[in-house]
Amino acid sequence: MALLRYILLVLIISAFSACHTISVDDCSTYDFSDCQTRKPDSALVSVTFSSSKITPEIYIELFRGKTDHGEKIDSGYFSEGFTEFLLPVDQEYSAKAYYFKGKDTIIAIDGCYLNRDYVKVCDSVCWEVNNPVLKLKLK
Amino acid sequence: MLHKANIEAETEKGVTALLYASQRGFTDIVKILIFNGADVHHAAKDGTTPLLAAAMFNHLDIVTYLYEKGAKPEAANQWGITALHYAAAYGYDSLAAFLLRIGFNTELKDNEGNTALMIASYTGNDSIVVRLLSAGAMPDNPDTLGFTALLSAIQNKYNSVASFLLEKNANVNAVGKNGANSVLLAVLNNNVEILPILHHHQAGLIPAEQSENPYLTALRQGNYQMIKALNKAGYRNPDNWMFTDYIFSMSLIFNQDHLMLGLHGGIKEAFHHLEVYAGFEQRLFRQRIIMEESPGLSYQYWESRSFAGLGLLKDIALNGWHEQATLVSIRSGLYYTFGNLRGTYKKAKDGFTLQAGAGFRLPVAASTTFDCFADYFFFCPADLFPLHFTFGFTSFYPLKKFKGKADIENYNKTIRWLY
Image (cartoon, rainbow over the protein chains, first blue to last red):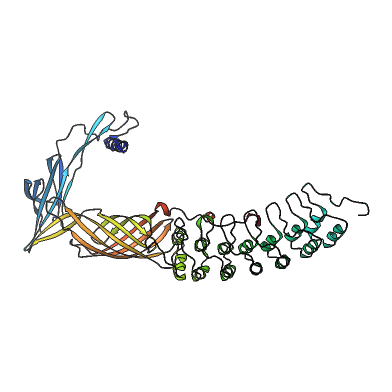
């Protein structure tokens, strides 16, 4: 039983390690143009929302953490149905978009985690971010 | 003969002219040879006497003549086979009648312990069975493995012979090879017709603790018609529940609200065609939902949702129970549904919901079915469309003791010299 656990642990660790490594046949010919070697401290979080001729601008609030108890870090009116925020990585973010239809109000909420990770290619470490999108378009 | 030929000359297998002529049915030659002093008792190297050779090919007139000239009618060859055995095996009714008339010992056995009655029952020669029993043959004289004439007849589906033996008080609860009784042999050999006769004569279902339950045998054979026949004959399965297989299914579940992946595992009870299962279903993609907070104020969230629960399923065969039967199924379960809303600590609606569904299962491979179901979820706490449609596959993995069909050769009798 102990041996089985050990084998399982080794397999899990190996799998994890394998996720962070890309095998390349010939490192001298590999295209490293997409490889970001500098560790990013911030990245873009996109926000999509419904925008129309009747209501071209939508009020959006951005939070670090969840909308309930998170810290509001930005707010304002945005148009064109899309915007982006440059934010510190390895954090959770959420947003609210306010829609008003006559006397009715619909608040669209979404959240994400801005994640930073890396892969090893040959001798280089290439950093990646998940580029999350907060989807606040109305159903 | 005038030239003093050696009348007893024999081949390297010990076959004399008399033996040869007897076997070939050359009555006149037989008479001439005997007149000239041929030895009626001389046996070939395998023990075959002229009388036995004549009996083998039903030359009654030669058998009669040799007997009158002093040949021993009960002489056996090296396998213990006598003239009466041959008569019983090949249906030589007149020969059997003659041998019995001259007082042939009906209880003589070959090397496997077969009496003439056993052989006649095995080969279904009714008239010879009748003659032998009328001559006082013992119906329950077993062979070396415990087989009786009745078991032989049942195995080979000679039910008129079996019925006659039972009327003559053959032991209906005789046990043969590896504990096989009459009912088990009937099930193994798909002899449906004999079952009501056996039940009428109070044949027991399971002869001993270590013997196999015939219902279990029928299940392993996938012979659901036999289970029905056993019940119809008046038998009842002493094991009320027979859990036979583990089941595992994977499916896609969808409706206008979402698409889910479902995983179910459980156990099948083959006797009542039931399954007990545990299921888990996960929405594949988050869905937007709108929750009204107060009049005029609503929130839109991205919701993930899962269902976990237990259920019971009953299969009904559309065209009779057999291994490739198309099944209509009904199922019911109790599920707990729970979810998660992105971007907020607020809880998604959760709670218990009752599932009721129906569908059908098509066998597509050995132990695998393709399933289609429609399920209705009552009292679902989440605002979901209550009707779900499911498409998936179910695989059955037999429990250890149900693996493999019963090996019929472990139970059936074979009389080798007949083939």
